[in-house]
Image (cartoon, rainbow, N blue to C red; front, side, top):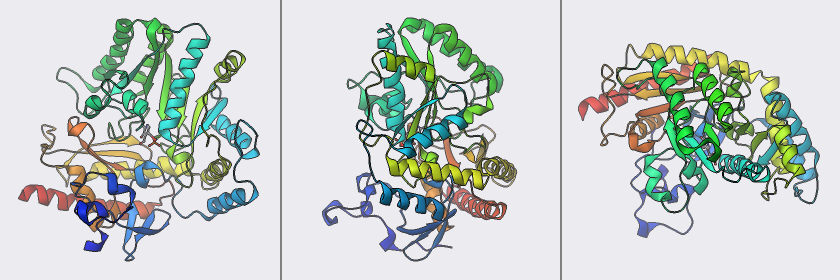
Length: 467
Ligand SMILES: Cc1ncc(COP(=O)(O)O)c(C=O)c1O
């Protein structure tokens, strides 16, 4: 068991007047945050080590980022080679090969309809590019009234002001109020916590029909886009959209002339077992798909907005899409992206994600028999959410005074497990942990992770029983 020394407590646990200038990034987080943060000095595969040599399994790949695992020497070498050969070339003044090669590679993996790839540095930026592209396309094609966006509630689409405006999170309402127009929302098709008088199926189909009603209410001519995650991230605890739901919302968007955008920032790049999570539904393709996180697996900042050639080339022949960023298609990031995709292929990581994900899910499901705090286990591939409940029979959520995500994270550290989860929407929709290790995980490592997770859960249940 790991011992968390007082010296490992991050600076945000010190009183403000004791803080030296500078500090780690978490200096900005709430000082009341009780979760200690280990100082990590080394990482390899699914493992991380702190300054005292304590080992941890990176059970959530950071915030679902490290798809190919840590310390990959091939990727590090490709990165160094590119930096030595040609570190930077700005897209408005020069072209470079890693950009050309990576866009061709991603377009081939994504398949027909996603021929143009616009690169940026992170998920929020790539999401903004998707919306700005569609808005510019609407203006250039004589549909200036199209500006309304519909997203799911709850959802998360980024931390920039537009990202927060797109996201469905009631905790952010007062923040964005008066600054930007928030997106319109329709209910997320949760399959565990469903209203009375509904089955899981009837509820998700009612959620799909809510999109139709919302578009009619707003006027189809005013609606620019519907944005959804094929498999949810933290906002829904890995709730996947189901195929019948996806097919129906695709049909609704097509009928009303509304663009459909999949936010695959977290669930894409192979994590669910296919390059795009939405590849699971061939009849429910989006117009635009957004990737980030696992695309460069944390080795470099990289995100991509996938756009059909038909739209990108049409817009280029009209006004062009003139909004770009300094670090768009950064050569080192593109070289990393290529090396990460090489590793995915060489190690057959998408297939491994499907196989190990199915195993982890089955074992977590079986853990329910021993642990009443597990309400639901859901997700696809190596994107798994474990919903924690105060009372399984009634699916009762924990009261506001208990923060299961923080408690599990603290207890997990003691078991050598770095777990990522945070309470979203103030816990109003439930509490869940993300089990999303690197796609390189082996069967033996899955067993190790499960043992540590079960010990963490047992300690949490004991703590709750004593409180
Ligand atoms: C689904 C989803 N969309 C958008 C974002 C924003 O991406 P980034 O943090 O890279 O800006 C995230 C990040 O967690 C996410 O999970």
